[in-house]
Length: 115
Length: 114
Image (cartoon, rainbow over all chains, first blue to last red; front, side):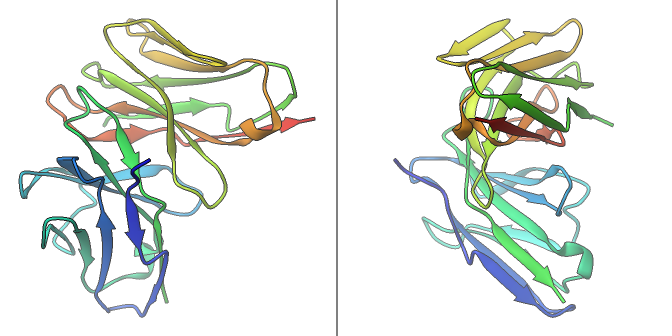
């Protein structure tokens, strides 16, 4: 069964550094998403991406964050100048079309630890 | 703002009994309601979903009900088994035009004891 894959599974970075989290969505999917889950808290929506541009973003997704589809298979989340409070599990997801008509499949997550 | 409330936060049931998890949402434009199961250290996995044009959906031991008037939806697991132990998250789509924004509940830790 096709799966969304994320790398790395765990990333430790120093405060102030930039990190790039990588995702390979399911191959025939057109919509891509990033969510995050701070330890002990809810899963929170960050951004959705379709047709090479951001469709929606939350108030969390400020200028510190950016997304990119650098090639035909990868979907990346870049976090600039990381802060301690960016420590969380980051989930990538993809769906065939929008959620009006299909479901989202999640990757296994990247645990980001900012020290 | 939009919010999804989920109860209970923990649920302990004996094997074979039923488990019910309830969620309420605030955005009247929400039209898609998935449930995800997350085992420790693993990805959230979609187990069932419901869209606003139906009131109930069943898949073997799992069922979801939706009451749009009251803005609540529930997950029912019958004949629970130890492998049902996990954290369950409800979610609701946000915004009438949203194609991908889900608001999640806080999760319910379900423990099924043999």
